Length: 176
Image (cartoon, rainbow, N blue to C red; front, side, top):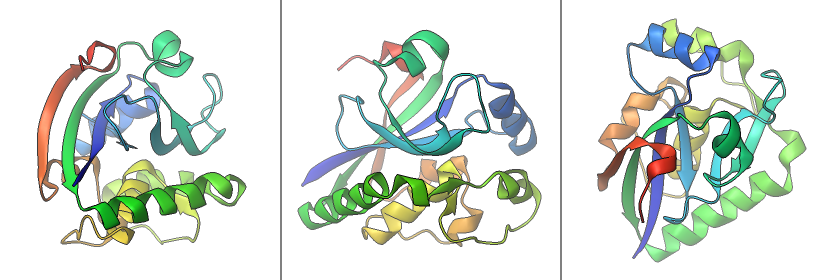
């Protein structure tokens, strides 16, 4: 058995505060980590500090400038999930596909706020963070959500099968 980690985050950006307001949920961003060092978090979001519209598939870690210098007050809930060896290997292959084809994937700005009120139109290679994490977990056979992936929200990750809440608090204060 292997362990993976799903993080629910609240960065405090204007966009995250707006999402929090409309969803009535304390977290607005979802990330995935393959180990408990959290030095590589996979998600869909902004690529740079200053430009919210420069967004897409991203990898970052809690020790880099993204969190250490800009979003240092990020709050989080970290869930640990035990997965089978074959599920883990498949998840790694899926994530490598995203990394190797990064320019193909785009942030779904159009669907971001639509999904709060309605079911968004699914567009190939366009994701928001919750949809991305749900997609890769589903394709790896780790999670079989009881609703369409396009309807998955941050709060749905609280109920992941075999998930255990292992930490809640300030992201930069995670103790290993």
